[in-house]
Image (tube, rainbow, N blue to C red; front, side):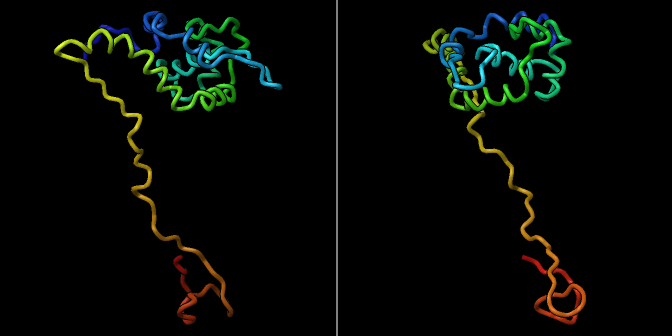
Length: 172
């Protein structure tokens, strides 16, 4: 497949996408305010950009991304991280994801799509966008129905409670 976009994880792709990230919207929507305890070293826009790096780079886990951020200057520049020694930890990224939530990420998506929809919705060949975030996950299809548990009853050995002559498992 031929594409006009640069390859995933390259500096050219990050520089191309940089202007489209709504930093002001993110910082206004989730401001860094006093927590009464732990201080927040990173803005919402920085943490959002680090999350985007997990999608735009060949790294497939946040743990590996956090380990590789000090080495990758272009990634830190994209995420607006000043020093290579100070990068957000996995816990910080997880807390940000919990603070924003699914509804917050939908708000960011709507904010990004608003200019596109406003520009093309009135035309006869309107744009159709598919959003798969509301689809249920297929996570219970191959679950075992019964578990085999060993149980001890009176007498020697493992036995079946229904038939005390044969040793076997009892199903729950």
